[in-house]
Image (cartoon, rainbow, N blue to C red; front, side, top):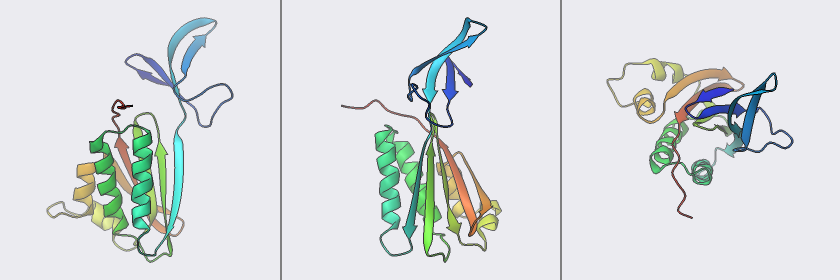
Length: 168
């Protein structure tokens, strides 16, 4: 349960019977209403693409489609696209690359990998006196880190998002 300026936000780990994302939720304590807000069920999309030429653009297309569906601002879509493209340039020798997107009420989290095993951590921690991975990611996402997972090093990205009103 997260407190907001206008009440509370209930986060559900999985869809619950009778509760939909965005639906009003009332918080009770001993039969007394102590708060109200909206339910949020994070969306999770996992895309695995082959190393073959042209499939990187599929990952960009999926990201743009998710962003459009959720009415992200153009700046958020652009920042996420730049971050994804920069990480895709550092993909390892694996035959496949996986992009996991988790979309919450106000954040998008991406986990991408496996990346080139040698040097990812060093590139993220290196000096920022040149335009490299660290500098680009510091500019376009709110947090990033290298994590060890199956198949090598992966990179986690997180971006706080702003939505815009739909024109429809």
